[in-house]
Image 1 (cartoon, rainbow, N blue to C red):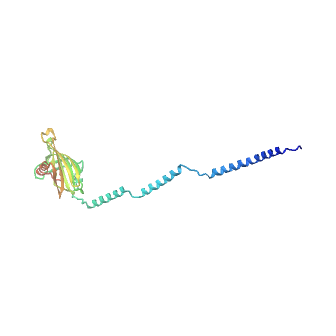
Image 2: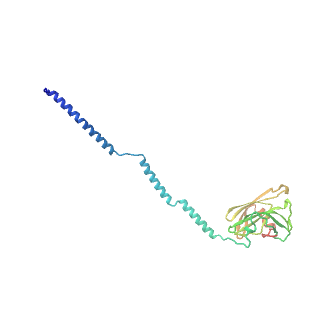
Image 3: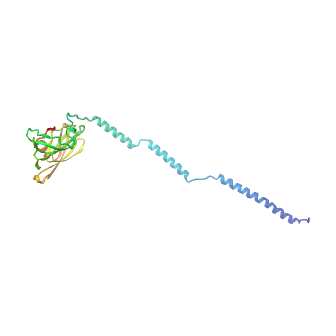
Length: 246
């Protein structure tokens, strides 16, 4: 075998060393990258949102489980209403007006309280009677006549109003050409509006009046509005007895 020159031998040794060390270096680098990659922390944008949502849910649950101001006020109002109801006295009349004068019925006639032959014949009823209310009422629709029956003329058509204070009648029923409305304005006050035939019968209702009535003691008094016009009908004219007659 021929002798290898020293220079070529050194080159061959260097090349062999490089070829041997390169794979080892690459392997070590790859291992380091894998290790670094596995240890690197992972961040998710969903994690903070879940935390915030959870905190929000807990706050909502806490708020829901605590009594709200509105609930407290509602319970207080209910209690006050119940206490107020305990103080109210309900009248029990021998004949309950809600039965005797039921809405939509025509039970008969009402004689005048002055002993005359005038009678009011009931054709219909709108009953707003309340035995527990400070002031309540019944509206009658019908016409005037005698003991035999209604007159049957246009001029005889009339409405009636009965007012009750604490469930008892303030007086017997009074007639008006037309009862237009009774509107509560407070626990013991109502506004009463009625119409009159101020000209010919053929023209019908041509005048309208309003008065404010207030419960005072066991009766009602006009306190404002057209007081004089009201008293002409309520005080000066005969009333009609609250009862049922055949």
